Amino acid sequence: MIALVQDPIAGQLNATERELLTAAIRSAPRQPKAALEVGTWLGGGSTAHILEALQSNGAGHLWGIEADRAIYEQMIRNLEKAVPLALHRFTPLFGFSQRVIPSWLAQQGSGFEIDFAFLDGGNNPMEQIIEFRLLDPRMPIGAVLMAHDAKLRKGKWLVPYLACLDHWTSEVHDISEEGLLRARKIAAHPSKKSLHRARRALLKMRCAPIEVAAAITPRLICLFVFNLLPRRFSRSLSDGRK
Image (cartoon, rainbow, N blue to C red; front, side, top):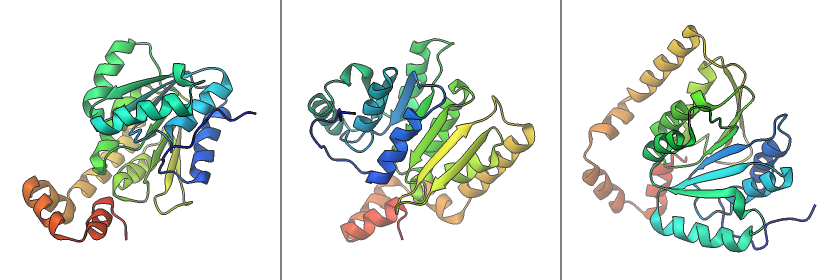
């Protein structure tokens, strides 16, 4: 097969993670018709490879959400050069996922289903929980959900939350410092028992002392403290890296 990626562009996934991402699309029993990505960044680590996989299948469309305006505009320019043959399968969406996803779903209509989703947005762990809750009702049995930074702060709530729900199976691929979550939907709805277990686990995580402190501390104070720290250390602390 001739690679569709014409020019390499910056990306945050390693080679193995990119292979798992594209394999999930190419080897799906039901070829994805609708895919969503949260957090495209510059387009090279995941967006271009998802598009390449969809183009290889000969079907499917990807919607990609990015919240940083400068990165959003650069991402579009990058993809125009890198994957011109698959660009017709892509629609960029600007804004924060919690606002974009509901309006996007409303535009698609009640029968619209999402076959594949990749979550890689902000570092606040509640973001992936909210994104999952918005997408889950629209994902049919057999749909695949993947998320990056599963071992870091970004995924520290979604991984155990999903593990509690019995209508999804999930695993974390320990192939990088960040970790890659892969989950597959096996039933339309969770049992009441598993849903209660998931909600209780989430509440416990949200009530952890460090999370409560972070929630009640004014944002300006948090930024002031982080700015006093060495940049490398403050970034590691924000990401949840050891």
